[in-house]
Length: 388
Image 1 (cartoon, rainbow, N blue to C red):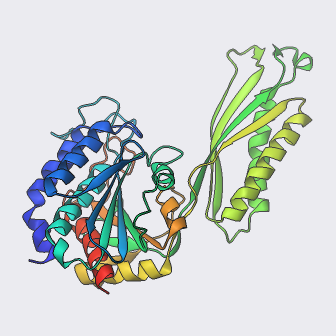
Image 2: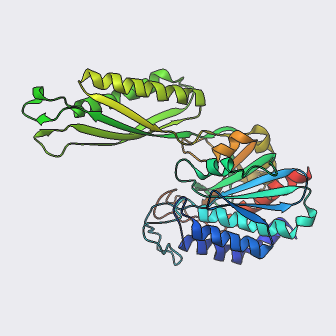
Image 3: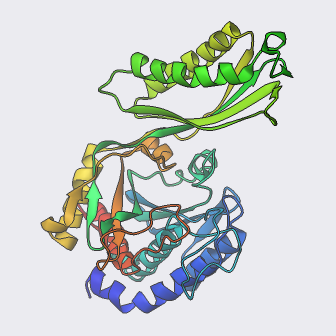
């Protein structure tokens, strides 16, 4: 029985598994029931595993020899589901709106398949069920710090993400930079409150804040090589309470995204320095706090070339596409810093739709049959890599 035939035979179980996970979503680093469910499922397959990062799980299939790692994320988002599906979330304000329920199901299906073929494996497959992808510092960083990639150490790691922009049946790859780093920016601008009719008696943090927005945007364009993608977006400004009061404080929030790690670090410095200097021109104190998030996700050329060939064998050349890098972020990036890595996008848009609600949307509902394709790609990537 081929890999795809096997997955077709267990597809009803995959549907049941995915819908169970979808009904019972859990937020980042709170995936206790999800981890228990994964553990019980692996135990039922006879697969050895252990807990890492509290709610993460590392499993091994096979014996001595080379090792390949496969990863799926398991957490959900703080979103109130609006799909109307019969298996919609039973937990108000929590939803699998990023497809991690499908990711987990696909890796469990791979585990089931590989365990049945364990005697044929010429090495070891390490399965990483990872918590906290949606929340800094990212479950990947914690898994790595707690030894998830040790004993044994993989030669390569593969992962995937459901893609609502691409139709069911397609898969896309890109070597090199794929997804950006992501840092959270928090500004506090302190002035001196006064009556709005007597601005000369105060120091206006609103004037400082609105000017700072334009000033920092110009810095991003002038300090960055225009050939290197990067963006800073200010997404929130709060200050003031009435029409006749100049407030004491204005707070702003935003994000910094980049593919180039060296430029990213320089940006931290000049954004901090220029915030202080510009606000001082208005007699205000400007402070920027940076919550440093995920690094850029850089795919290995070797790993991508290999996985692309596997996908072409499984799906046909016409269904394997090139992925346009995005300024999204993914903590799979931490794994890509440790070893050759390939992260691909799996088409999840139902074929009858020209467009569908995207990731992190309360109406996100990918095509479930895409799980058979994603599981086949993961399984064949591991099998063929160990046998080459």
